[in-house]
Amino acid sequence: MRLWLPDSVSRDAVGELPADVVVGLIPRGAEPPREILEAEFLVAPVGDRHVLGLLPQMPGLRVIQTLSAGVDRLLPVVPSGVTVCDASGSRDVPVAEWVLAAILAAQKMLPEIRDRQREHRWESHSTPELAGSTVLILGYGSIGAAVEERLTPFGVELIRVARRARPGVHPQEQLEGLLPRADIVVVLLPLTPATTGMLDERLLSLLAPGALLVNAARGQIVDTRALLALLQSGRVRAVLDVTDPEPLPPEHPLWDAPGVLITPHLAGDTLAGERRAFELVGEQVRRYMRREPLANVVAHGY
Image (cartoon, rainbow, N blue to C red; front, side):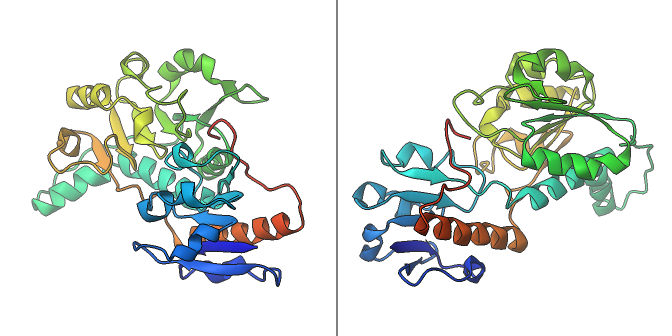
C-alpha cells in the first residue's frame, strides 16, 4: 500500500507501520513527485494547491486523512468514492487554550492597554470579570468540551449548543432565544452549507450590548459586514482567529475596527497538536491495513 504524507518534523509520530506500506513524502510548498499519483492513502496538506489539483489523477486513491479538524476546503475537490477522515481531537488543546486566552485578553482589555503602553500613556480603567459570565459555546463537540474544562474554574455559566439536542446541549434551532443571554459567544462550528452565513445580521443583532464574539472556527460562518457595523457602533466586541475574506486584505476595515483583536488563523497550530495528528495518521493506516473501520470519517461536512 502506497502512503503519502507531508514531509514534516512531526512525521516520526506516525510510529511503526506494516512492512507492506511504502511511504512517500510530500515536499512543503513545492510540486510533489509524479509518483504521488499512485497513492492509495493520502495525508493531505489542506490548502496545498499542488496536491489538491492532482486528486482527480489518482485512480487508486481510497482514503484521504487530514491533519486538521476542518475539511471544508478539501471536500469540494475529493473524487467520488474516496473516504475522507479528519483529525478531530488532535487540535482540541491548542484551540481551547487560544479561546481561553482570547476571552481573558478581551475581558482584561489587554490589547487596549498594550496600545496605551506604546503611546506611553498611564491610564487606568476597571475591567470586567470573567467570573459570573454566561458563555455560549456554538458547536459543542470535543473542542467545546475542552473549552468548558478550562472555563469551569472561572465560575462561568455555560450554554452548550450543537447540531442536535442531547443531555445538557441545546439544538441549533434554539439559538435565537439563547444568544441574548450570553455575555460571550464562542464559535466552534465546522463550515458546511448549513453553517455558512449562520451568524447573519439578524442573529448578531440579538447579542447583548457589550457581548464578546470569539470565532475559532471559520470566518464564513459570520456575516463580516454585519459584524463590522456592530463593532463600529461599539455594541459588541470580538476576537477573531478566522475572517471572511481570509487572509484579511491589508486595506480591509476590520483591521481597524474598535473592540476587535485578530490573530492569523493560528489557534490550532502547535507542534504538540501536529504530533497528535500524525499519531492519528499512524493509527488510521494500521486500521486500514487490518481492514478495520476508520475513525473520524467525514459525513455531511462533519
